[in-house]
Amino acid sequence: MYFIYMMANRKHGTLYTGVTNDLVRRCHEHREGLVAGFTKKHGCTLLVWFEPHDAIEFAIAHEKRLKKWHRAWKERLIAERNPDWRDLWWKISG
Image (cartoon, rainbow, N blue to C red; front, side):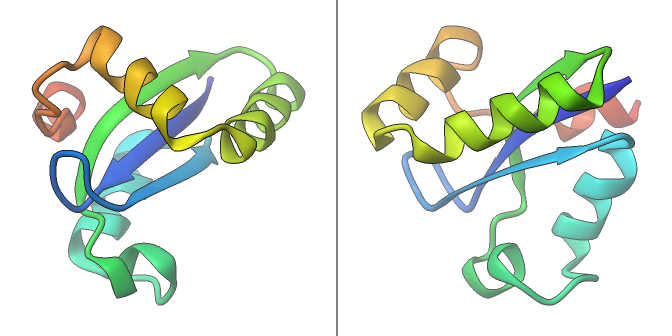
């Protein structure tokens, strides 16, 4: 299983889009600032959206498309499943 996901620093704040085969581990790394980079620099610790995929090729291709999307399109995608931009970490880590 592979996941495309979006992290944010707050509601309507800075967004990061990524892909992983272990969503719990990767989100933990973002939350704890364990890896230097964009999410650590911008404080993107909230998991606000994710989508599972069976094939890595599809997940990577979809992630690349999402990264090119306009900001409004990404916000609309998040709002469809998570209108309050709640941290979904608790949903996946339980």
